[in-house]
Length: 211
Length: 222
Image 1 (tube, each protein chain N blue to C red):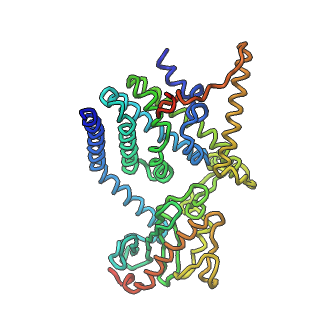
Image 2: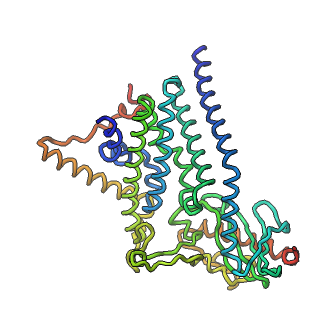
Image 3: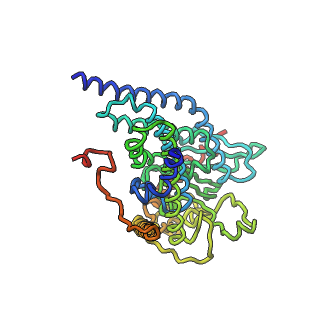
């Protein structure tokens, strides 16, 4: 009996000290982590919104769990474009969050995936914008950093009107071809973009009127 | 010099991936490209160092019967701390690449294996060296695998394209391809060992892979 108490006490002590260490580190890094998250969001927004944007505001309109909109305005305060962030949990590795830039007329400016856990090399073909650099170009010093590298799948959304996209079917405006070998990831991105577009179309006037 | 030996053994003689055959899961999953391999290796080394030192420091206070759960708690706490520190202070580029691999380290057998086989029986300094050697050996093995798989599977090295047109050997991107490459590596290592043994005038006998080496459960003791 004494043995069991000793064992429980030791394990309990290790767990307690471990938990204490985690509480401490969590508290100490909370602010830097939030700041880092905010910085990545700002950077992502600058990629899908026009260059003339001088102020981006998070809107309360159409905001729900996993969905939020941002209004970009220029130096004179005129609204330029809108960015919608939507998420789904149907990715291969779980949550997929996309950021969709939208013009006044409802056309998509660009789509990028800001958070995902898709399989590197396979599912990431539908989510990552990676610049394919040549070794020889790097050695020759001729490589340039492209801010918004192309991705065949994601670029297919650009220029389309915000609507209900369908993978491999539907009308010519709705049809998006998925990435072969990455169907689940493609579908997840599609679902997230659809979610954003649906919310945008439902609340279009409210979004553009927000000050 | 005993200290140097503890570090060096992890690089070749007792390489965790190629000799001890530990950590097969992340090896096969993460070695699809050299960059992923490097990232995973560095993160694992970090956790190995920390967990080895901490477990070595408290080794006298933990009763033998609950040692495995205690080690796992310590390792999990360490991995979570590394995860939080990286989210807070690492540059976003690094986070995006390494982010998904960090939680996987908890189930990496190398960390628990070294804790049980070495850190629980040796001083903190030697445990640190052992962890460093094992971590670097793991990283090197993973990078070698990753370089081959990436080159054959995508025609790139560290995501830099070598030839403009490349027919990818798709098998290399998946686990079976990893097994194939690993098999060739092991064959190559054995060939080197046989040759060296012959030069030294003895015959090479492969190590007995009996359970008694491992220590993780009671199977070897019966």
